[in-house]
Image (cartoon, rainbow, N blue to C red):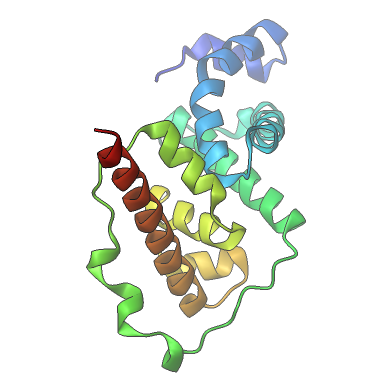
Length: 185
């Protein structure tokens, strides 16, 4: 989505109307981003609001190097990560290289079953926090395990293990849904 330069300039000037227009243009898509990182809609809405506060605070720093939507998305992802780190009391299991089995990184972990977008979103939200964060950062944001380990404060092997477990969980849940669907027909 492209945004009119006038709206950006209006937001920089602190004009409420421009801020409202920007919010209406991007909030629905960014809510989807936030929902992938959060356990439920209410938490995602909180992250979205906090993210837009940051957007409006730092919009003057947008340099037009990339897309404006990409810039907002990065703010939302970083806000979701900050939210996760604040509330996370989970101690990630540390895995050393010797305990990471070859089956933890098989291409067979990929899920190819057709699935409704809303169902997939609910399944992602049901993942344990660590699994969900690593899955989102790796699959949707394109981070490498080294980067994820730095962002979340875990080892690279823990990141790899969390991703593998998240994929296995999603694959198993989608296979269960497929079996139920086949029984209904």
